[in-house]
Image (cartoon, rainbow, N blue to C red; front, side, top):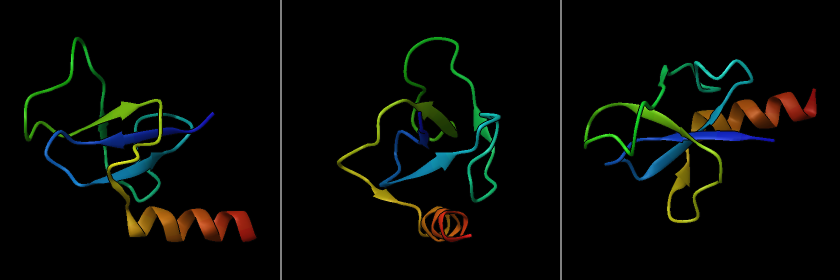
Length: 69
């Protein structure tokens, strides 16, 4: 099952690596200790791929490279 990360004010989302601490492109992900964080408080993990946001181009490229190799 894939996990994704996004920020409350972001129009993009990222793919989270298996350890859950970082995105595929290397950004740190915070863990939530309650509800959705306030605007500008970093990336948080979500379980479903967002339909209203675009995938990070770096994550997209790295995923394609790992799928091909």
